[in-house]
Length: 351
Image (tube, rainbow, N blue to C red; front, side, top):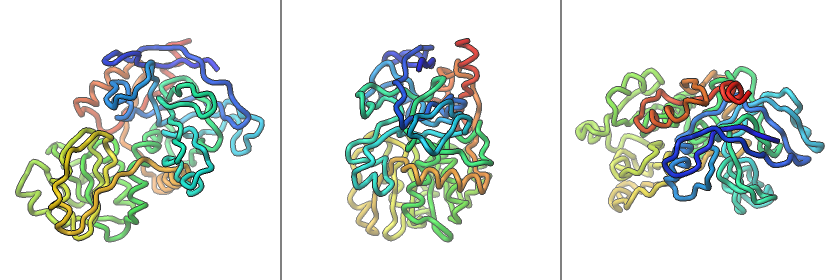
């Protein structure tokens, strides 16, 4: 399967057009024509090698909406023409205890990432959704529920599930007092989801310009992290905080906002956040944890939840040729709140 896409070939390099070979489909595989792909902050990190693990050339993209082109002989769940979704994981062992529990993202034998990973069979580097098509094992393809706009649903597959999984694991519901730190790609969807689950949501942001947005999204309160008085007044008022900031920062300042036995869950950054002051945890038996997207069943639960309640990310559709501009705008926080690439623009370029 010959694919055409956009790739970064070196640290600091621009994303440029690139033609490459997809692996030969296996009996359990689904071949997908990519229609839309979300632009995740992880894509920017990997293209820049911020995590020191990028294998170049890298084709990012882990929020994929597409149409089934063909299926292998053993595929039973899909047929050509189906509208489907693929998230950050395209394979796992499916045999370990974590996989058996529906937690493929924590596969004890390591899940295969949609891009910049290693194929479980061949060992070849995987390439993501900034491309015309992709081949994925049936077990990691999800049917897109009716009612979800295919041009806006893609960010649910990473940004959305990044917030949904911890909200569900910590049993957020009616009466829960939830803080969302950061109102970006992950944060704005997390606000919508937490509100839909019945929580009282407080947004903690460094940007005064986002106060109005936070309230429109359903937050009942907004606290500016730069306002020491406001932060002090909010101290001890939250049961749970979801930290969605995608760059290193001090966690201790947010721990003070938690009530007795409150939890802060990091979902926005893989980078080190430095040391945490012990007293920030001691005053109230507080916890710090982290969460890594969700398994296939949990992601399907999210998609169905959003379809039933018409919860969609706030998106801006771009052409594939504008990806470098999009990356630059992301670095300057100039997006409300998620880019989605229309892959028809790539196909037109390559025709």
